[in-house]
Length: 199
Image (tube, rainbow, N blue to C red; front, side, top):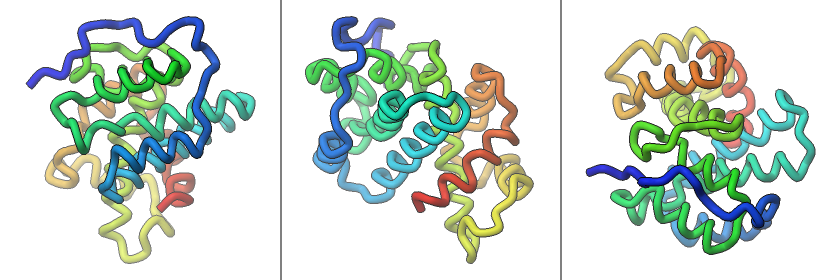
């Protein structure tokens, strides 16, 4: 079933800079997502987004929060409305008059599925982190020590094993890294220690 959103413009220009609080975002997440594993994935991606905004882009706290919220809510409709993902959360955020950049990032985090290409840095990094975060977390679960001592080469070995985390699209991960002009190894090295903080 196609989940193509059929448009490329999201939100309203006059809502630029309007972002719900962390408490409001967590309330929406908990209302829409009951699966604790999916909640964890969303919080992990949110943390990675905030860390990238802070460390690599030196953005201020307000912008870091915007990046965090894009990550926190990107899969909010997946559990209850998988056939409408991510149309439901896009519409909800438009109704709530949220920042159009956040909405576009969510709409473009799966361009092969939603028909929206990542344009901004926020768009591209959400696409980069989404699938790769899941693969790395799956790897942590099979290691007795979890994230402790995890190395890039270990993740790369699992990345090349198509049967491991088979639902994770290696093609999309490589496409995302290419769009962001980043090497897969560098992104993995960035994710490991930071994602371990939200395990």
